[in-house]
Amino acid sequence: MTTLAELGVGSGGKVKHIAGNDEISVRLLEMGLTPGVEVRVLGVAPLGDPMELELRGYRLSVRHSEAARVEILSLV
Image 1 (cartoon, rainbow, N blue to C red):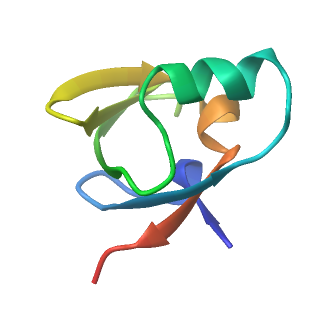
Image 2: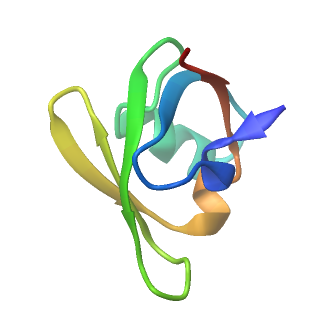
């Protein structure tokens, strides 16, 4: 299992699953990280938190702990 938090800058994949059933997982889904959507890592802050992502034609920043809850299918 690969999570969004494990991806490097410039890499990406498709969202497979959001772990958990709480407010944070619902928030991630509401921000567009739904299963099947393609996401790419644009940047990571110097200490690794937050991460800047691109999905659905917009940019989104998420905490490392939030990104670790997003399971990814790597793009080939």
